[in-house]
Image 1 (cartoon, rainbow over the protein chains, first blue to last red):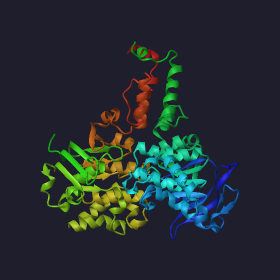
Image 2: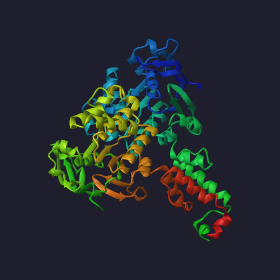
Image 3: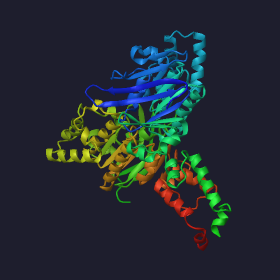
Image 4: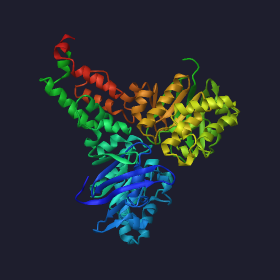
Length: 293
Length: 288
């Protein structure tokens, strides 16, 4: 997929872990500024390996492969020749387990740490921190110790500590693992608010219902290759392709496709198209009274 | 009901310094060979409940005050000599597989517990190959445990508990890091074990899987049991923290006056119901 305003360019990237098979076997893709991308695929398909290339946590192991970042100031950086902290200013990465990255005694300090290291002005920093806490719905918890937060709140704190850096792209690995539905929504809503400010968001997720609802683009991986790439509707409609990689579209999408109403991906969309399908065929609206006659 | 595998009454737990009880007068019984899914939002007390049932609370948790009665096959938990005695009956799989893995190679991880129990070698080998088959980990046996993916670790940990052949398995989100195929694999394995008489309590957020695999559901919130019954009964009620999407769709359409069939818990059931509603020609409808 080409994009008029690219922020990450991945060119023919291969990655082989020491003594192992190729985790990435030639990936080409461009992520555009302002996209909300979901990377999907079964365990071991190369999702995390790909995402870690976006900010130089991993570099291509083939000489021909390259990952280039286009900064907001119009500069192009090749991840291979650049220091990690330099790349992290453009692409922030949130790890799967928030407890591996949280280390301060209050949420406020946790958020202040990164920007302060980059020499942030104290006055604007305070403002940035409170704004970011609000964005992720932790505005009342600034002075709380992260160990007293729920797992979901800690996940949002970890996301906030990346968002507060003001990077162009936030990459979040499995943001909703082990979360209940309500908490999963809060986490995705936080990222959606960030995205609404013109930022780019990349998530790795197994939760197809959330992917269908939030992402603008879906990249399906299998055995180190990009298997499908497009809008959620385009990708989730390729059912034979998806079956190969054990991805199951959300129930709403599967049901809609099975009963001949493709296009619906979410519960709302399925309800609407199923209701519409019932109306015209029956001529007179199907009403409870009509059914009983 | 014959002798219940698990009987819990008046179970309450308060953690030191906590504002409210983590468990508040919890009571239920589980028949042998059932799969019981435990649902509820974060903080509902699901993990605390599993820790009480396995004796970790109060025996190994000083910061939690517990009262109430728990019996395994009519034997009060307080009569058991210690955790090792309890684990003869109960196998617990924790939420984070990392804290449970103690060996460097998968095969050793599976064999270790059985050797400690003095299980005869032929029996060890029998259970090992059964575990490999049930949980699809045959090709992982010679791998290093630290090099496994999160989902692979989860399958290994559940398999290692299976190897001890417990009569009751307590699983705390055993599929959180598994993809759909992996989740289904673990659920299928649990179903097979339950059909052989093993009782399974599984804490799980994946309500679409629970709707299909569980015999009963328990919905918890803030330390209390809010609803219990068949998946259909619980998921249709207001206590369900989440519903399978197909059930949500059917309930919404029913509200609009468009769903007269039985409410579905799975996609195939929803398709069948839809076909019954739409393919039936109007003349047929008029006949009824």
